[in-house]
Amino acid sequence: MRWTHGPFTSVPYSNLCRITRHTSFWRNKTMANSIKFLRTFAEWGDQVRPFERSDDVLRILQDLTNDFGQTFGAYVGGKFTSVWLHEGDAPGSKEDLDLIFVNQSDGFLDIVLRREGVPADGGFLSPSASVQVLDEIVDGLRVIVGTDEAGNKTRYEAIGGQYNAVGPAATLAVTNPARARKRRVRTSA
Image 1 (tube, one colour):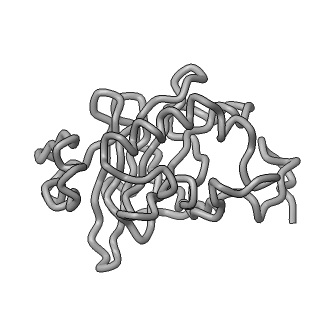
Image 2 (cartoon, one colour; image 1 turned 90 degrees about the vertical axis):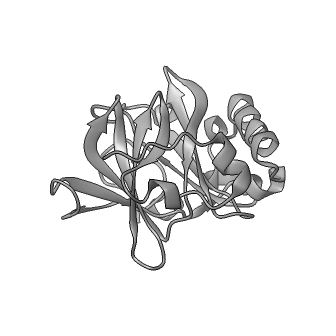
């Protein structure tokens, strides 16, 4: 099956993250995109496009391994997806999409944001069974909601260009001590 319209008309549907539109009744009843992580970063061909494996992206992943004491293989062997997290409509170029990686060793989701085409560390999310990107904008980036296995929701907003947990669940969102040291937590909603 192939997309019939939009920016991904030449890429097989099965190779992309599957995004479904539905109404989210959590916080202001805004629309949300559910994200699925269907591609593995270590695969070649249609699975990973060249700009997703650029030297800049690999440098950021290397920095994350140094910051959090992870192995590089935890990112390379893990699943990832590309999604538009910035304000406004998604650009026509796929090369401007942001990347979200699932770390194999600790389950955290690390974000690589593209700012004017240049990849940058965009923070991270706690391990989540499902991830939704809301249409709500904070500091120029869309709000993300992660839901864990128990059904608890954690809201993530961009604070200073990086995603951080907010609200009462913010202090519970970080369970890895190495990540907790790097995390700026805001507990006010």
